Length: 363
Image 1 (tube, helix red, strand yellow):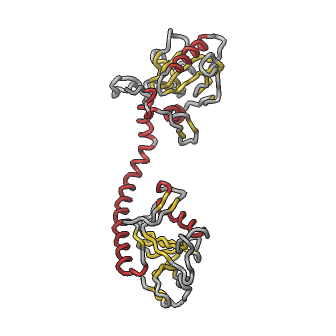
Image 2 (cartoon, rainbow, N blue to C red):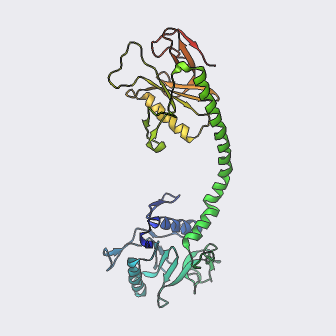
Image 3 (cartoon, one colour):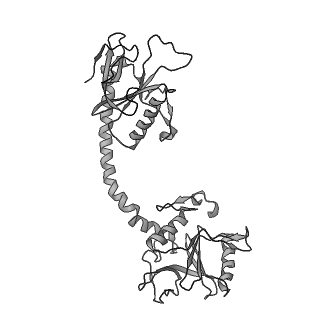
């Protein structure tokens, strides 16, 4: 049986919260969001204070420190589980709390199954929880058996998200569960519910687009066989390394070549390539792809000399004449060499023989 400590699913992961703060684990990040955003606690130190102690490593750096109304320090540690070193630290910190000359007045360990709290008034650590003062509005970590506001002395109320979680089989308090419920209600939940209908609508548009894309593709092969399009949906001949998505590579579905007349290829060099993209649905995927293809067209060392995008609005071409974007284009046939090709409407010369005697084939 795998020990919880070595469970890969519980391995700490570097987590960045929406305010841009980096944390050593997801639990630490969730506690930060819960205490600072939900409860409004202002921590005096975050990973910026250490204690020289007789423990492993010779020192101990807590996660959060808060200055109490009397000027003392409330020290907080966040851990996924209570291991041997944490238990040892708890003993050493309890000794600091018991020392009347030490600035540390209370110590809490927030972990996945609850809060362990000690302020020197009990024999050992006791269960703690988050409390909010109904008088001054301040939030605190206090013992469950005694929860008066350190600021004004008023009896504090449980934070609404910090009551015992009766849904857990063991009935224990779970910081994770409470945070996730609150974050769903106030954070990602409303955004997701608002976005979900848009996403469903996008899927409908995407489905219609795919059907339209397929019809455009069939029309190209049926009406313009002399384009000599390579269909890579069945046999991949060409792929690109990219600097964005697609797992670092992109395989165009369609491409053709524009060999230059009277120019003989050297060795395995490729003829100039025109990539053809048929996609009627405009999204971030397509935008990133277009930027990458534009980069290839502008790279003199790359054999891609032209990119064609086809959607319901027509044919759009990016080439050496229009290297910074796409312009309206069409399919042409050269009267001199017979080559069929895509070209922008303002530069329709044959790319193979430079002849200006050409005929427009497409609408």
